[in-house]
Length: 338
Image (cartoon, rainbow, N blue to C red; front, top):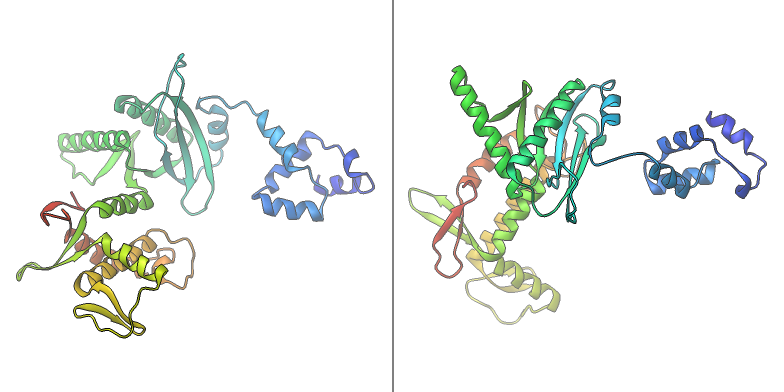
């Protein structure tokens, strides 16, 4: 079809070219990205991006579970991850104006494909029972299509956390009744589903707390040796950098020395803050790797023998020793694991 389309339109004026529906659908399969499709248009005769957008607008997609997609997925079974984003829910049409949207999406583990399965609109945040019911419906449809759900991923919205915690509690109770060991997974439609929270959102929450609180790191519990990291150090370093406020002539006691002169940053807090930033930078790299080979080992995709395993083992211990403390009173508020 592609070759016939090129030959048929070879000598036609660009404004006189007409494409059939099948040719437009074929062109959609080539449109992985706007820039890539634009390059293909320079080499071959293809429908414009505007034409393809108009075609997509005619596709009948309504709020709720999309049965057309599920009927297609039933013939395309493979391992998937269930990704829940913006978990807000509306099941019936009302006269209220919606201000939130819910989207359920499937994402391949070994491949990067993503398929939206369902969308809904609602007013204000969803209620936990409603969200739980819709999650069950989605999992049931995915299971019926023949897929294996490995994990569910979402941010830390209050409704998301409450719904998933309730599922975990129900699964724990069922395991106790059967005399089985609970492995911290959700059991729905006979599928064991791992609960994961989106790593960037987790680190963003830590950052938001770090803005208002200091971080206390327990170095040695026996001798009670602690270090304090502060967001004020980051702001000070930033201001010194943009204003070049480094005095090479005078020497400041108990401040950090560099090859271009001493910085007006307290030595102990400065090094503690630098170490905690380096730790969280490595932690983010370790859960955000996408390439087989990268300049940073922890940004590689995880394998059986990669550095991720030993790093995560040490990172768990490190996180257990980290607490947020009040900036003024220096009293402990809560730990990251709480």
